[in-house]
Image 1 (cartoon, helix red, strand yellow):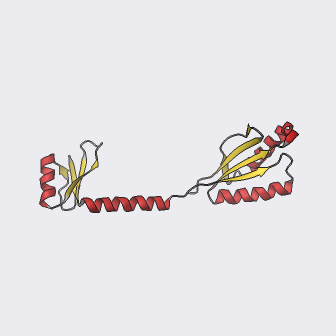
Image 2 (spheres, rainbow, N blue to C red; image 1 turned 60 degrees about the vertical axis):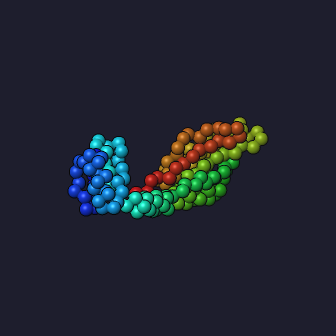
Length: 155
C-alpha cells in the first residue's frame, strides 16, 4: 500500500510496516483511496480526520444553491402589456437562478386555440433566450400547455 502523512516518508509499504509506523506515532492508519493501485493510506488521528471530513461536507452543503421552480400562467389571448409584465418577472426569476414553468391555461372552448398557446410560449422562450434556455417544446397536458425554461449557468 502507498503510505502518506505527516512525519512519514511517502512510499510503498506492506500492511504490517504501515501499522507499525502508525503505532509508533500513536496515530491511526486510514484508507483514503481503496480503488487506487496500490491502495492509498494516511497516518493520521482518526477523530481529527472525521471532524475535518464533516466540516468539508457542511461547507459544501452551505455553498449549494437550491433551485426553485417559479410558475407563470398565461391565457391563450394574453394582451401585450400582461405578457411584458410576466416576461419581466420571468427574467428576474432566471437571474436569481430559478427555473421557470410557463403554461397557458385553456378554459372551456378556448382549447380550440392550441396554436395561439404554442405561439405564445414560443415567443416567450425567444424573448428569454439571453437569460435562459427552454428545456423542451411546449406540450399539452390536459387543459394546460407547459414549457420549462432553465437559467443559463453563471460562471
